[in-house]
Length: 339
Image (cartoon, rainbow, N blue to C red):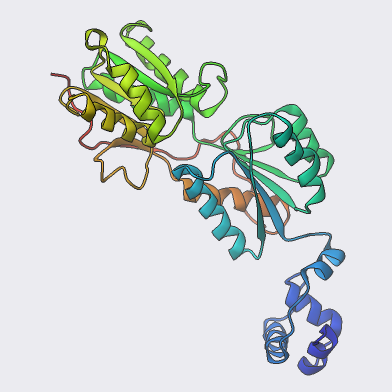
């Protein structure tokens, strides 16, 4: 089996130089690095990540905790994270975080302690003080992408402003009977994504002088296509107080709403305007008006912050945690003025 000494002899350098060239740590001239890499390839030498870890104290592995893997937004974020990590020479360990309980506690108190990761990216997770402190004790940098909970490095869109923008679009079209299909737990967890979008909806209708209740109804449902379908059937099933416009907390909920409207014989947008949030890949196919965000790019930015916290990247300062990530209103044919 080839060893680092064999690579060094073939390349005509010291073992320390060969190790630096293959690990990417420490300065090595470009021509020397290429010579060492060619020698390693010639004899089939593969650097041991365990050995490198003993020297550097790094595992080249980042833990990613995420609440869902089967929803479009989280899948897009995860793909962006994975591409960026692989490009930087890092592995990824994925934790599909459950609801609060013993399973979730084990992720922070056992798995992240046993599994060696250099840093953690939390995507759309509402962290409590114990969970953040658990990572702090292990000196693992934490980057939060959305969600809530104390973390020095946080990236997120302004979900309150997103909810307000979506609702104001419907108001500007002339709608005065507007419903909001909110994510489950929006009222109970005001700091969450769904809670902030609900708050934006309430801000917009209050500013327009529309009282919450009969003319600005809110119903909570799972932020999925089936959840949107079931919730919309409930919202739209009473003709006497049926809204003329609906703001869904996600594009998948909006797709479910459009399907529910079809089942009930309600024309979109003549009888019901529908707007969502996300910029889902199917939004154009459904001709859905939406507030776009860019989850793949958000994942890449999260990795960029992790690498800077690990001193793997230099020059630019960390992004301002208070600066929201970009969003954009895209108007298509599911919204129009009321009849």
